[in-house]
Image 1 (cartoon, chains in turn orange, brown):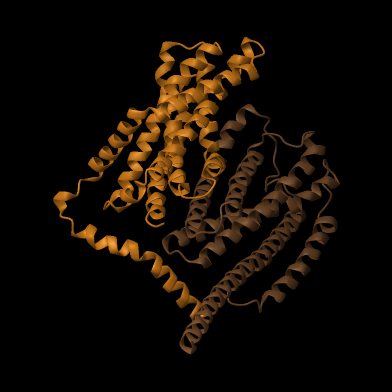
Image 2 (cartoon, chains in turn purple, orange):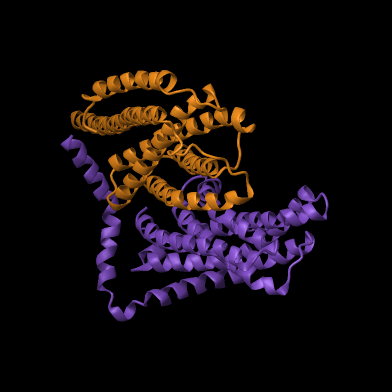
Length: 261
Length: 242
């Protein structure tokens, strides 16, 4: 028994030497050389968005994918105008979720492909800033999908929407994609070096995200059926609570899973 | 999981309790006035759900422990919890429709409790799929631990959510504790204890199996090292003699 434990300890120790060697160097950096969490996150986010802006790889892919989905759903569900209106919230949310998964999957995969993930990991105090930055960049892409798909779905499926409802609809969508990107950021970061990552991400992400997504759908349905605002707000309060929970749990779990290979 | 010594005692107790709870369910408890014999499935359905939650709860606890201090033992305890929990959850989802079909006329209705159980089943089935598809590295164990934690965080969310969105679907009167005949209640409690014992048995076996497997792997690893050393020695001797 003790032999086994010892053997395990030595093996674990051997794996950790890289991390231990990096730690003292990190500590020796002066405080002036260490930007705060907010600045670090901002720099990482800016880098992410800039590199995306140069190639437009992710935005173009996800927006085209979203467009394809709306077209397919319209073909699949169009029976008459009433059914179209009834399925619109579901179509919108499924489109956002699926297209968002593409963006989320890319967010760490491109770091892995460019071999920059290790470098990012070596930055002292980086994990939390990295989480924040990736969360915000995923959120940006998801909001892009939202801004693109919502008018599309409303237009194609003939949903009637008043201008006064727009802020509440926007808030609903924002709360939904915020929680979804918080979850997605954690899972995509962890799955980045795993085989069959592309298949595993949705398998892991969707079951956990279903409650939030369904709440988003329900809130949207309530909104579009022109029920009184308090009913919508009761959904939005729940979604906010879930978002807070996911972001906080995500930040903790992200740091505890990214620190070693 | 050092030994297996007390396992036979636990297994025998479980066997006796299983017989007892069969007797309690079919003979002691009165036949339900409206549903008739079909209601007997209640004594297996509800305890299975309790056992499933026990498994998921254990997985949640040991996943947190694993993330705080990674060790294969904690991972085994968590993985086993999910596996046995999913088995019981599958039992709930099998006995539920069997009960629902004659009573409600449908195999599945979007009753809050049903939806919640189905969603939980999906989360933990994804956990098992992940474990079986993606290998066995420490990294993957951490991913699985995170999934188990998020899954359990989802439990209250799912319960609140499905109760709320139950509004648009038929709400079904459930077997509340209050409306139960006292004899039925006793039978239910016996069944719950029995299923928890059964859960403990399966869990014990599963964890023991996992620890044996790890031990075996360790031995294979050591044998490989010996073989390498031996080959090295032979080669050196051959070099010296020539």
